Length: 340
Image (cartoon, rainbow, N blue to C red; front, side, top):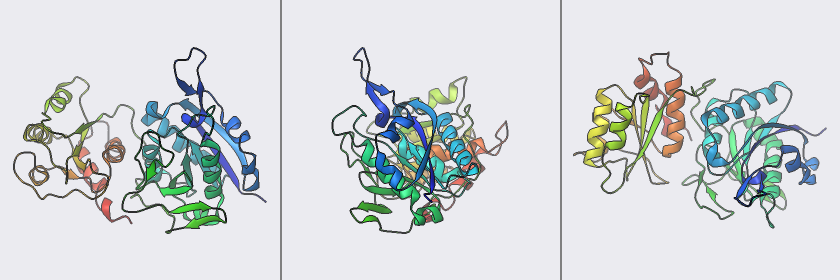
């Protein structure tokens, strides 16, 4: 009997075709149509489809990510042994990380998509979908659970995977860690143990009203983005900094971040670099050591966009007035570098 794998379809390039008015590619293909385009899938699993949404990767919201997680939990409750999510590549690594942090069902969730649209000659969607289903149906992934991203014959853990190229088929990579497995002519070849490598926040969901500001440090960046966020009527619940190097900021940005900390707003330091972890080496205005001494929270080696997901989940876990937001965020990042 074939394992039961549910396809959760959310749109993205894998489901995109040209619009009638020639204004660009948009998601238009259903999950059933994606499956029908890859008849070999039936050799590895019995499939059913849940069309959750139909949006481009760059339009995915926290609410969409929540819907994906809820669909995965629902699939497990209805007898699926694993889930494959078809998704736009722009934010796929974020949604995969969200799932890795919060899914409680214990089944593997494997994300995939395409760099070339459904109606383009040489589209990579069918091959990627087949790889994802083969991984999702494999005993070792089913036993391990966790969240993954299958693309270009490789399967990556959600904890480390990043998108590295705008258009190449081999866009996804896991800096310093490498992929979990790869698809070969002889089947799935494992390079390391599959598993849930992200520190969990079980059952959490991002509150749609939570606002986590993301600011990137660069040459001459000032603190106005932070100042506007602090002065906004909507307020800001937390700030994630994509710092330079080990997590550093300019002096002006650093001063604005210290002001946010004084107001009780959690600040998480990450790096723009793809590999390596943050560290409080440098003092002076905006230095990571200065900011950590002022109460900022080290984001470890998480990319800024994944740290933002984790921060939003942590802030959402507090009560309505969020009096313990900083402590919740700090606890959420405790040992984040040690999950290997």
